[in-house]
Structures are given as structure tokens and as C-alpha cells.
Length: 296
Image 1 (cartoon, rainbow, N blue to C red):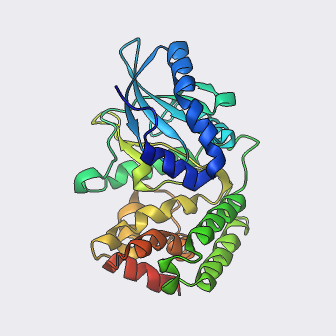
Image 2 (cartoon, rainbow, N blue to C red):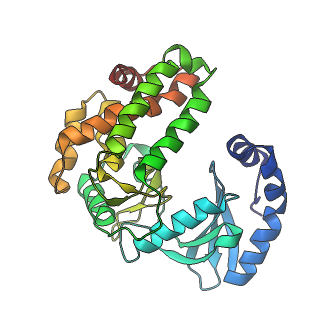
């Protein structure tokens, strides 16, 4: 039987939300049992996460389904709102049901559902470009926060993690603050009014198989400059010793309106966020070194 919440997953939630999340963790099995009965689900697997618990389920209809739960209802509300705004987009996981008062969303299961770039798979740039085109072409409904709000949150979280850590020796707080100012300038200069995914790294894009291809999950949505979503992708060639320009050349043909200088500015502004965790682990790969130089 799949464990609803193991000790490691609980520790991640406590690290993210504080000790008060313990009550939610204690009550989670009962909540899952209630929703499983309501929606006709059998839990078959669990996936790690920092803001909640993701359970892979089999529906009574035989279909694979995904039950997502979080102690922060605002996360569930914004995620569900974004996914519903993208209803009908083949490149986005679709909402089947939600109980937002419980912080719960039921999603379609993606098959095979592995991360798109798992096991060193090559980047399907045309699919990634189509994904971005689909999500950024939707008119943002009212009620979403701004990209400025997202930037403030991300850098606040990064500062808390960086302060006093071993990474601070290489990445001083002054450097992080400079990057924050760069990102805020980009987020507030009026460029773009798209519904931005906000966390579109390769780990949040799944393989939907030959008929579906790249499928995005786990948005942290806001309204603003769509170029924000490109940074995690154009920097991928740098992992194998390539350049940012290699990333531009790979993605630009598949993304109408690609603005290389705008995307470059976002990569520079976001560069510290790529390296805090690797620096904490002592990973000084060529990619990390390149990103550290980009923070200057």
C-alpha cells in the first residue's frame, strides 16, 4: 500500500511551511480517503514535492488520474485557475475536478508521464515552442497576481535559503539583491501581458507519449512578460558546454516573436536562482561556473 506521506515528504513540507504544517500532515490520510471515495480513486503511487503531495491514482473508470494536495489553498486556487484558463490546450495537463477548500485538484493522468528530459533525452524544441505558444496566447482572466509579485516571492525565498548558507561565500547577498533589482525592472517595464506559467523548468514538463508530446504541469501563474518562462530552456545547452546563443538558435525557430535580448536579460536576472542549491551541495560544474559569471 502506498504511504500517503512519508517522513521525508513531511520534512520537506515543514521546511517550506514551518512546524504548523504538522496538523495538515496528520490529517492528510483522512482527507485523501474522503476524496478517493468522492472521486472514485485508488492511490497507487506518490511523487515528491515541496509544496504539497502528489498522488498517482487509478480511477474507477480505469483511467490514470493525479490527485494534488497542498496545505496552502492559495497555491491550489491559482494553479487550478491557470489550468482552467488553459482548458483545451493539448500542451497542459487538464483539470478534472477540484475541492479548493481542501487544497485539492484532480488532474488527468499523463502517459507515460515521465519528465520530458529524463534519462538524457534530447530536447524536442518544436514541442517546447508549441507549448509556450499555446500558454502565452491565452488571454489572462482577471484575478491573477502580477509577474512582479512572483519575482518578489521568488527572491524572498531565495534570500532566506541563501542567508548563512555555504553558497553565500560564492553568491553574496549583494549579488542576489542586484539580480532581484534586474528582475523587478524587467517585470515592471510593461513588456507583455501574458498568462505566465512561472515555474516552467524541464522537471515540470512531462512526456505525453507519441500522440501528445510535451505537457506542462505545476504552474505558479502570474500575468506579465512571457519571456520569463524561457530562461530554463535556453540555458539547457550550457549544461553540456554550449552557449546561451545555442539555446536561442534551438528555440527561436519554433517560437514566433522570440526576442533574444529580452530573453538574455531574464537569464542574467534569474541566474542566481539556478545556482543556489548546486552551490550548497558543492557542485562546481561548468554550468554552475558559467551561471555564477552571469550574475556579475
